[in-house]
Each structure stands twice: as C-alpha cells, then as structure tokens.
Amino acid sequence: GAVVSQHPSWVICKSGTSVKIECRSLDFQATTMFWYRQFPKQSLMLMATSNEGSKATYEQGVEKDKFLINHASLTLSTLTVTSAHPEDSSFYICSAALKETQYFGPGTRLLVL
Amino acid sequence: AQSVSQHNHHVILSEAASLELGCNYSYGGTVNLFWYVQYPGQHLQLLLKYFSGDPLVKGIKGFEAEFIKSKFSFNLRKPSVQWSDTAEYFCAVNVVTTDSWGKLQFGAGTQVVVTP
Image (cartoon, rainbow over all chains, first blue to last red):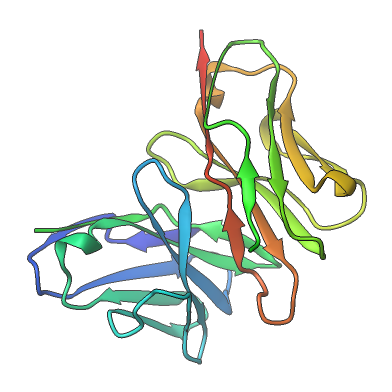
C-alpha cells in the first residue's frame, strides 16, 4: 500500500519551454502532497506544500510563478516548470501524505538544454 | 534555525557487521521522526517512524531506531548488515506545529556501502 507514482520519469526540454510533472497517489487519497528538489549528492529540499482544492504554500526562495502547482483532486498534484532554464535541471520528487507519514514517488529527472 | 544532522556522510562496512547511523535534530518541541532509505536507482522508502510511545521502534528489514529525547537523537541500527543494505539513508523530522503539519526536514543523508 501507499504507492505514489510520478510521470514522466525523465524529460529533456529546450530552454524557454514549460514542463508538467504529475504526481499520483495510486491506492490512497492524499489531501496534502509535497514537492521536493534533490541536487546531486545532496538531500531533499522542500519546494512547496500542495493542498487539494487550495493554493500551494511555497518555501522561502521558491518562485511560485515559475513552479506552478495544482492539486485538483485527492490523488493528483501537478508541478509545472514554466519557462524552464538550464539551472532548473534537477531531480524533482513528490510525496503524498497519509496519516502524518509521507510516501515518495520515484522522481522525475529534468534536463533543460 | 531548525536542523537535522546526520553524523556520517559515508560508511563502508563488511557483511555481518553492525550498523549505527546517528541523527540529531535541533528543535525542542514535539517532533515526529522518520528514517527513509533510497536504494540505488530507486525512490525513497520508509524504514521506520516514531510518533510517541516506546522510544525503541522496529522497522522493516531488521532495522530499529531509538529516540532519546534528552539527546535530541534518533539513531538507526541494524545488528548484522547484508550487501543489499547498500543504500543512502535519510533521517527526517517533522516539527509538530499548527502551521507546519507534515513538513519534513531532512538530514544530508548517509551513503552506506556494504562489501561482501
């Protein structure tokens, strides 16, 4: 139980384009999902908290207009990286909360050329 | 500022050796504590968690962790490791307040390599 999926698992895009990443809780409903960024050989950095039916809460230093989050249903949250630039290349990981425990997706590797 | 410290960045040990990974946090209030593991090429998986009660918690794959409130620590242990325990281990803390529900703060991670 408590399986979280992400799609796509990897994506390459040109600078200036937008990329959408989906995060789904497959066997449970999640009112709250989280989006993280992981740099090579580093820990996870929380970007934002996504709440179903309301606006996301962004961590300090994270541009909300650049990283658009939508949590339209209890099983789906999306992260859209708008006007992506090479510095946005990273590993993006989502998690979904169930009974005060977060369950993580497999991550999406984004490469912006 | 709140922080989570993992004492070792890299640990190399032989099969059957005992493993202990340290984790300390800096917040004095109520916390929920977690250990996650990330096997090579795989996603983060929950090893064990502590919310309240018995400070010695048992997780999957023979791992256990002990919460020592006076030391702000939550160390992970396994008596006898296997090659398949090669992975990165992350300690994470959720500070329980009204406006930070569920938010995890992660340690830097410890890369564990078990040699045959």
